[in-house]
Structure formats: structure tokens, C-alpha cells
Amino acid sequence: MTARAAGPLRDDIDWYVRLVTLVSRACVSIFTRVRTEGEFGHIPADGPLILAANHCSNADAAILQGWLVPRVGRRIHWLGKKEILEWPILGRLARGVSIHPIDRGARDVNAFRTALRILEEGHVLLIFPEGTRSPTGEMRDGKEGLATLALRGEATIVPLGIAESHRLWPKGGPPRWGARVRLVVGAPFRLADVLPPDLDRRSAKAAATDEVMRRIAALLPPEQRGRWG
Image (cartoon, rainbow, N blue to C red; front, side, top):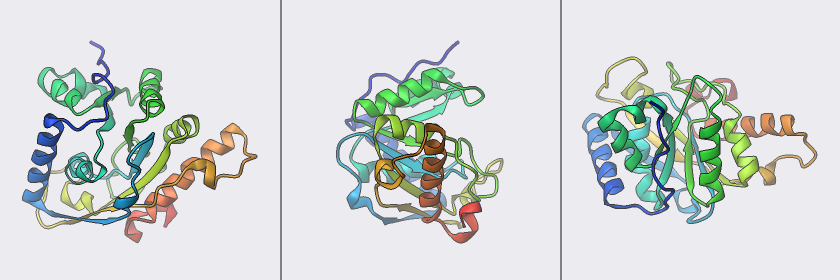
């Protein structure tokens, strides 16, 4: 069976999104306290927006759902692995919070089109540029999909740093008590304002990807910044 896109593209936060947000926050709070820092007040209230975060824990999605959604004030659209949306019950729940399927093992043209449509219609899209979780907490190289979307969709980008979440729930391991997680929001920017205007398409994508990753890394502790340290 092929997973379908998660319902209509909406910008509102309905009762179901609020409920999932409360449950996510409650579940994470059992194990840790999340501290928020940064440019929350500068997140755009309208227009196409890409939220770009590092990814090193099973808990990252719940942290973002619980602490970011209330501050953004807009529905967040996510790209999630298609297997989740193919499950009978979990798939329906995932579609309710606007998770859209992506085939991580292939070049998924349909997922790219959905993501581009989200931005063209002026919604919010959350992306983990690394594509998968880091097993050590250290940032990995970003994939160029985010840069392609931002360049074509002319979206504003807000970098997000999730610090120490790999100590809370590491890849391949169980949740742990005692970690202190920070969610840090960086300053919004547009690629058109920071990239040289004379770059060819390939160079622009590479430069844009590096710019996004550097800005995310700047929000993290030195040991998590990888080659952007």
C-alpha cells in the first residue's frame, strides 16, 4: 500500500493538534525539563516558512511538537517516513497533525512536490536537513532538499537547535532520566539575502545547505556542531 499525503493543507491549530501538543509535552516532561531560548518573537506569523532543526533523538519530534507549536501559533507540516502513515491507527493519528509521507530510501518526487506546495501556499514546513538521527548527537552533513525547496519556494528559514536530546533518548536506546534539553531558536533569514547573486544552480544549493547547517550548529554546544564547530 502507498501512503497518502496527510489531508488538506491547513494553517490552523485545531483541538486535535492542541491535544497532541499537550500529550507530547507531558510525556517528555516525565523524563526531562526543556528550556527554551532564542528568537521566538521573531518567527514570522504568516507566509512560507521552513523550520530547520538538527536531529539526534527519538524525542526530537515530541519536543518540537510540545514546545515549538504553541510559540509558532501556526500548524506545522512535517515530512515523516512513509511506513508510519501506512500503519492503520498510527497513520491516521499522524495525518491529523499534518505529517506527510516521504520515502527516505529513494528520491521521492511526490514528497518534494508536497513540500513545495506547502510553501507555495504559505504554510509552515519543518525539516530535519540531516535526513535521519545522529547516533552520537554530533551534527551530520545536511542534504540539499531543504536548500532546493527554500530557493524555489522563496521561504523564510528559521534554524532550530535541539541540544542534548541524544542524552535523553539516544538512537537505538531507551529513554533516560536526568538529561537537560534546550530548544534554541535562531534568527529568521532568507537565502536570497545571504548568498552571492551570481552562483550557478549547483553551487547555490551547496552554499545554501552549508549556510543552514552552520546556523543550526551555532545554536548547539560545541561538541554537537560536527564539522561546523
